[in-house]
Image (cartoon, helix red, strand yellow):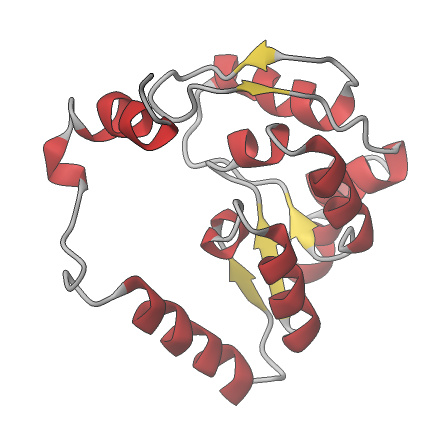
Length: 172
């Protein structure tokens, strides 16, 4: 039997070997995370948007601890919807708890990919594929988030956090 790590390597790194960096290029991952968190701590009056669930999409408990530690830290879900969709109960609880500090994000404008995001966030569907095999070879589940939480994630939090967004362009 092939391990999940081996599957992930075959799907992600085998076709793109240049994506893998050494443990010290440019620095160890934990060093980079510690430096980022030191900046959040040093500037408590600045709102930071920690992209891609702060690189803790596979450990929402740790991300929650960071959210509690840094009330000035926000996050977004770009490029990590597969991490949420594979842990629907934990992800739903996390998104409800931190609903005022999570935003919708997407790395690129590829309209056909948005359906996966909407399906994970809005439905109670079970066991469906991710839209890119090399990001996630596992099946996902819908979180069936409440409408008010969805509105906050989709646009209300961004209006509140990011300066100069024209709120009139969005529903109340």
